[in-house]
Length: 445
Image 1: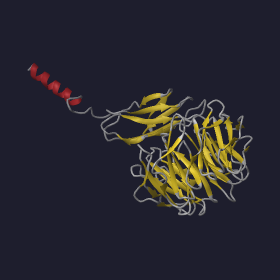
Image 2 (image 1 turned 30 degrees about the horizontal axis):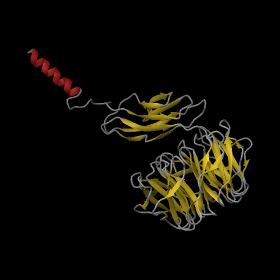
Image 3 (image 1 turned 135 degrees about the vertical axis):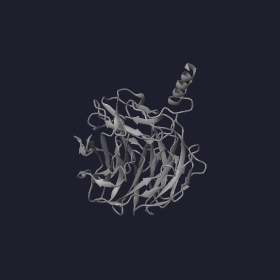
Image 4 (image 1 turned 90 degrees about the horizontal axis):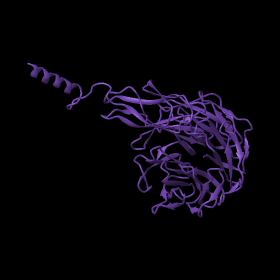
């Protein structure tokens, strides 16, 4: 009898724990890695509950477990303060698949140290240090720096912040500069490398391995590998790659799998798959995707879920959802949305939920649009704020605290503080700040 009872208890124990069975509810955890945290008060949530306060960088996991096939959604409940930071969640949603989730990433970028502006008519680069508290700009010693080419029109930073790449639309090449981590001063590296005709836009993939240039006059994209140690470029053997008419801007998605190119004269978007081992490009099924007249700029929201295209001629913004597997674009119901005037540049809020548009011609202002998290549709949020004349390039500080706008005709840079709650813009003291002649692009390091 005792032997039978013992066997029965053992069988029950096996059923409840191991022996090929399951633990039942709450057996899997959701977690990941936190980087860049400096402030205090960061609180994460999973599925709008199970609050988790984080005080240091490194691995984290929520306390409550989840069942297999359960959906999870990691969001920021409270952002850090002292100093203020905007922490961004990536890979924050999915479904439990018989394993703990460990790949959620939460990054908390700090305020940029330096700003660089390409002055298309004076053939040089303005360089500034950034006041981390106010966002204000101060010209650094040695600025402006020669662009080492004519008509510098676009800029890109290596992900590690060590190198600046300058597209020179007049001399059809790309200049490479190393950036002093201490002073922000620029030093030329190697010799400028040739592009196609009329290069007008540039971007670098998230890994920092590949650089792409949109050649407006030759309807193509040039592709290069990047030497991570020297910053120097080598053009791919099968470059350039043909796209639509007058490519005007380009962006990769956050995974680095796809390259999105706006074609100004065709009014559409070419979507190209990136070969991760070589950097080569190939068109995806369904490409190009219709946009509006004068498609001039593209932005992808911080979650990588939605894409937006500024249509300068038709004064609209096209809205799309992104298929993360194929890269294909699907127009959001009601797209495009009308703008007050011709939009020229778009910048997503790193904190998510908003996108900013630089409106040109008669408006000369910056508009804030709220993003519907379910559909991707845009709604104007608050009143636009004034900028300089012809605000042509807009970028957001990596920390999400400040917005910077290059004003092409008034030869200056407007700087705005972003409200931590409403995300509204307020121009900072002493703004705008003087630049060179025809400031055409701006980046924050």
